[in-house]
Image 1 (cartoon, helix red, strand yellow):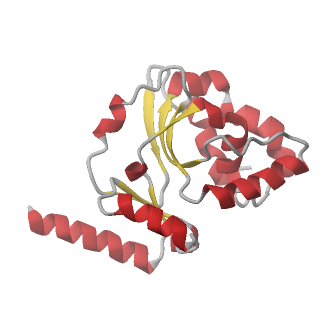
Image 2 (image 1 turned 60 degrees about the vertical axis):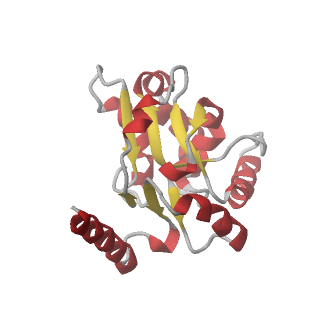
Length: 193
C-alpha cells in the first residue's frame, strides 16, 4: 500500500508504531521545509493532554470549504468554527498519539474514499482530531504558496519577516526556486559566521 500514489502522506499518522516506547515527544517536519532559526522553544510547549500542537493554516477558508464538501459527502458534521491546522510542523505528544491509534482510525473512516483531493491526511486529521491540537505561533510554519489570495499573503507578511520555519506548498514544492532560496539562506548564514 505504501507504493500507492499519494499514500505516503498518511505515514505521519502511523509514526507511533515505529518510535521507541520511551519517546515522549517528536517534532514532525514535512520534507518541504527550511528551518531558519532555533526550534528548541517548541520543546517547552505544554501539550499534556493533547495530541500535539500545530500552526493554523494560513488560508483556512479555502481548506475549510474543501473539507466541508468532503465531510458532507461522507455524511459527517463539520464545524467551521474550529481551528484548521497545517500538518507540516507538529510537536507531537507521542503517548496521546499512540493511545489515539490515529492511523487505524483514519484508515477505518476514510480508506474506502482514498485517493481523494481533500488535502490528503491534513484534511482527515483536522476533520477527526482537530480539537485535540493546540495552536502554535505562526512563525513556526510560515507557508509560502503563490495560490494564496492577496489578503492571506498580507496576513503572512507579519510573520514572514523572521520565520522560524518556512514551508513551501503547492507548486513551490522542491522546485529550482526552493533550492535557490535554501542555498541563499545557507550562504548568508555561512558568511555571517
